[in-house]
Amino acid sequence: MTERKDYVIDTSKIKTLKDVRNIFECLGIICDISILEENDPRYELAKEYFVIPYVEEPRKSLEEHSQELNTKIDKLIEDTKTKFYGSKIYADSKYEKKFDKIFDNFEYAKKTGAFPQYLSVATSGDANSYLVMGNSGVEWMTSWFNLNASENSVGYYYIEPSLKLYMNKTPNMIVRFFMNKLLNFRWIGVK
Image (cartoon, rainbow, N blue to C red):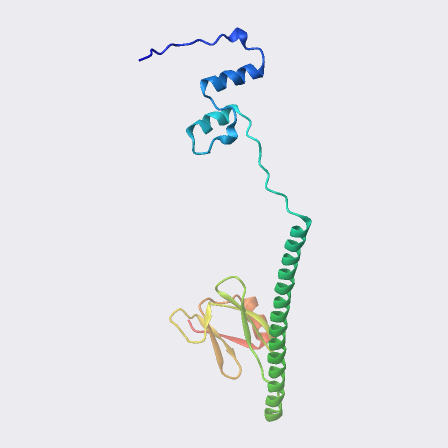
């Protein structure tokens, strides 16, 4: 068996990069990182000391770009046509419903001599108040009234001919006065 001898590199003889490369090759260190695979443990070590060139993806030709653009434009045109068609169907159905409602109102008016009266309710954001819109006007009503008397009722507004709005809180004198004079709502206190 041969004995292992430790050699020391004489750094004074290293003058050029070619000398450094020759020393690496003699020691078995790979100078061309491109022949290493990424799962090789020497690759990580070599990555620290070597400049790894950036490999660009091959450039697309003008025809490939043109084909991609045409594909995208065709898809956008198809999507837009589909949306316009859906919008047209929706608008046609709304149009039909609206005119059916108008014709129904005229049929109702022929039979009864008057158009139908509608009442709609919308909230004000406050869970306890409602905006009631009818043919006679618009008014805010809150949940401190109800149509049936309860043990909390302190009185009610009497509305001709036979409607009573029971209140849980007595309105002040100014409100009662104007409700009576302007709306013909008469206040009747229970307690």
